[in-house]
Image (cartoon, rainbow, N blue to C red; front, side):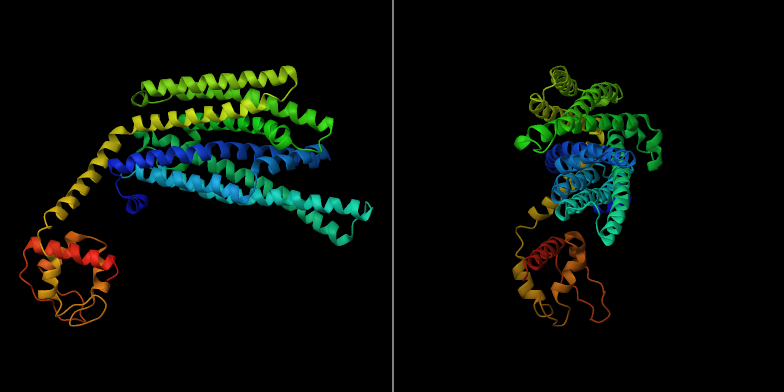
Length: 448
């Protein structure tokens, strides 16, 4: 049993229904946001490097504006990126219970890399903001020359800008690679035993196709988001000149158009690689709906290219969200179909354990545990203080709610603590001992 099996419990049928709902909600938050942010961080990193090497202020401004509009701020990054990622990983821990696969560990490894990458990404974003303040000092002082200490600080800031952007991109890239690899492996039960190292994801065909699918999705979402947030949302960016508008429009629409073509191709390849047991009518249906929505997005983007107008960007933005929604639901159906045998096994174990606990409760309802305590136990034990034996508030919690284990001790007591005399056998039946154990646990949990 691995570490994650030790901290997880087998999910019951009822819990599985709740977890599947929670998983879909988390993915519907995470996938659109992480696609947009990863696309934004990649583009910002690339244009920042090129802009500084070629001394092109338009490229540098484009890199800054992309982060300002698409990466939003730290709180949003935490709420829509990091927390949903960890939530998804925790659900997979439950789904992969007793599977002996590296899926949970891979997902958490990806989450950690992404968390560090996000911290560096927002540091990268902050350096742009500070640079803008320094540049504004030139206008304020009516001089092109800044004080020497500010110039030195700007040099340090430039170096920090480049490093934080580079490492943010690398960490988020590999974090997503392992995260997507773990999610892909989850619906391939036949590979659980053979995939024992995260490095195997680099040569795994299914993981590679799924990651290219995500890269295409990130390019599509980022390109459409630039069109939407630069030109439509709240009136767009106000101080853009015509050259900058033309450049931003042309680049973003071409990026999203060719990315959506690659996305459709990757979706087709991904579908071909689904295991046979994962296929169902619903999978075909949702795959078809997603395909049609992506075709519609491609047509809207082509209309923007042909007419040189961004008025279709709003429709493309909304339809793309619905495409991601249907794709996410489809992926969860594929997962559910593929691991159905595993889910049946672990949920049966959980349901059997629940029935066992319920049976224990039902069979002791006719026993008056309070009366047993007042007639047999109170002379030696109290809840909050030592009498002859130790207080219940210290001993009962050690059983962690295990009724059977505590009942066995009450039925046939043995000396445990050398600081106290051995507890005499009270002559209780097993049924009475079980009722007494349940009662003690309930009383302690209630804070008696």
